Length: 198
Length: 198
Image 1 (cartoon, one colour):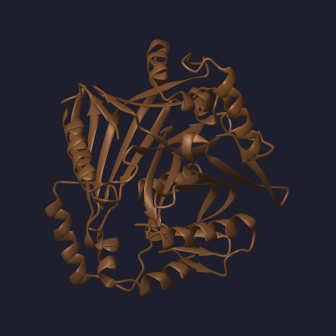
Image 2: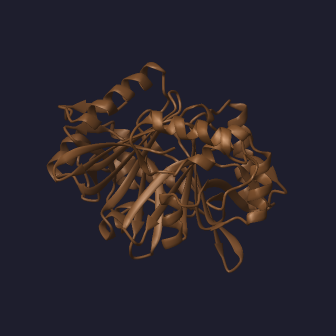
Image 3: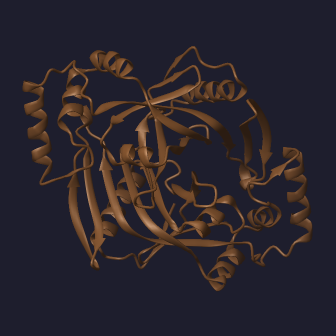
């Protein structure tokens, strides 16, 4: 589930919400899964991973991460991303291009304090994407964190990322590959609508 | 469905095939959907889209595209990509990093001639990702192509892309975010295995 708060009434947000509702009705599994594609200008390497999209507040898409993870380092070196959703239940792909930034410490702290403490224990204990000798060591670190940490105190190295798209593409799969592709692009502070060839 | 031909017996390919079989048994929808994340060094922009993974031949992953599409231009400017699969039926994410190249004209021609002619009519008629005035115009172009084109002759601007990963990550979702992350990385012509923190 994605939580919508004061959703923007701009055209692409209205389309997004309609498709979300449709996909919910079609019992879409993992409806909050969103692929975030990034680029590291240090390594000259494209990377991508799925994260859970938690909120759309007004025109801001928000997810959470370890701030020392490889994706955070990518965002620091190149702050433009592409986000991609695929809802197989209704055969819809949504692509968004945006610049990404951290959410505020206050926002992170409020959100962290409300989360399941077991999830917080993991957020505190895990040095995301660093190698470790075994899966058992991960479980052990987690158990230690569960006992020893202050589980409502958001660590400095954990928090949200927010992005406001400057480009939306809604792709609807059709027979014979006659797919529908509707684009909304922000130009001179206005959304321009277009249709792309399949 | 993905077609496997003489699949490599290297460790990450064996894991891939096992997970594919598991996902098939779990009736995964659109099992061939794969996200290809790319970077344009001309526009300094990350992009991503889902394509259909058609073949894994030995150690080569193959999909097809219009060669004049924005993704093709991205590959031309920066040939490294990340490919991402998510099989929700078994909660598995597979990430691959690779360099990408075109398949041969001969390979493309053989494949094209075997495809459904209706799909070929679309491949011939569509100037992929260019804007057009209406969806009706797309249908009209398609109908024209269906009547006029030689539908078994592969056009120069259409064909396959092939990539051989130098990095595989298998991510398995678990309760409390204690996710399992197994990595295989090609170093000095050998696959090195590691475990990543969640």
